[in-house]
Image 1 (tube, rainbow, N blue to C red):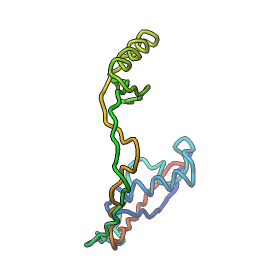
Image 2 (image 1 turned 30 degrees about the vertical axis):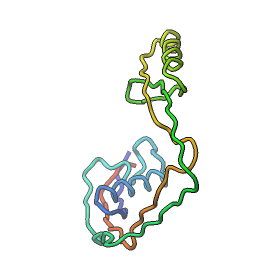
Image 3 (image 1 turned 180 degrees about the horizontal axis):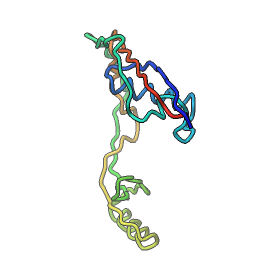
Image 4 (image 1 turned 135 degrees about the vertical axis):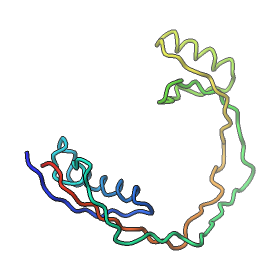
Length: 150
């Protein structure tokens, strides 16, 4: 086990975004290699950062509106969902009674706690009304360098 110098450029509108992009590039190119790739993804945290080019945010944007033919139809659904952070959705039902019945059956079968939520879902048509894009912006470039285990 030794150490190897690395230097990698990252692009982004902020230093944190550029660092994340550079790290992901190193991970894609080298794999994790259990922390011994010799690249940025196995650095011990003592990296140097230099701003090569400052980002230039967009001053204007374009808006492309999506037109909808006909009316959008919204329907009410009852969702049986995990109460924990994963928020897994187990199923959707058309009536509250059906959702409660299925939730009870699921809890008795699995021992997991769930909640039943009411939601509105778009049944037909698109839920997108517009796409808003920056007209012209320039990503910043940061150079990350240091030593990493290899």
